Image (cartoon, rainbow, N blue to C red; front, side):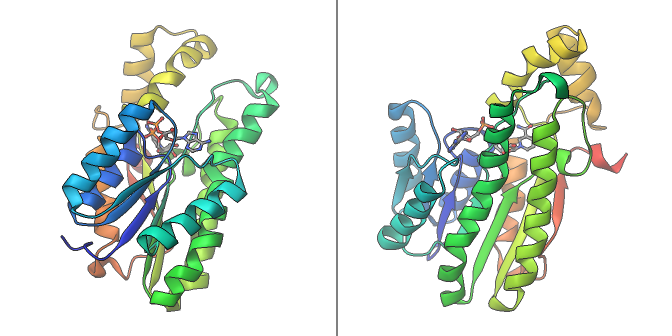
Length: 261
Ligand code: NAD
């Protein structure tokens, strides 16, 4: 229970990788604020489960990551009700697959807002609380697409590359305050985000569902396996340990060897 006195906000934690981060932090005793969209009863069940696991409070915020004011309110609510935040994970993300000439402008704007600008707003509001304590952990879920591109994912690839630039910059700004700032770059993890992009990938590349899964997704990774949400969360947990204080400004892949090729 090494996070017993700590508070974490995980954006986009009602499913997939974000929920795994929240569970990993709660299992180590952290108070957690979860965020994202979904069925209200399912979210309440997850929130209550986090409380049961941590023995500490867990709260849910419906803040929309496209709304900077809502993000400010979420961080303030966390500070007032739970303390901290000591740990923030910028994880909310969406994806859209389309050729550049067909890419809807509103999708470009939404992806940049949710996958990149929300991380700016989170850090902008949370860093002063971390500086007060002289300890903090900022983790952003980037992607293998922060290191390599894939066709028809212009907004996603641009946002994830930007997220790594933001990570490095803020890491330098807060380095003397006991705050580390890192990105984790997963390869393909079987979550709703990946499942939703399959029909568009079938369309843009003229492939069947099986071909997309085997020849596009799994083939990208030398392990020929999906990365699991638990494998990604385990790295986030390690970054929160005092032993990880020397790791900052890094972009760490958990990608089955994808970007080593
Ligand atoms: P997911 O769809 O399971 O989770 C996305 C989360 O973001 C959900 O909780 C959703 O409600 C939330 N969200 C979406 N729009 C939001 C908004 N406007 N405001 C607040 N919350 C919002 O997908 P996931 O795969 O777990 O994705 C989590 C992160 O991991 C994303 O940043 C994604 O880009 C990144 N990632 C995923 C993979 C993968 O293969 N699944 C690979 C690399 C990186």
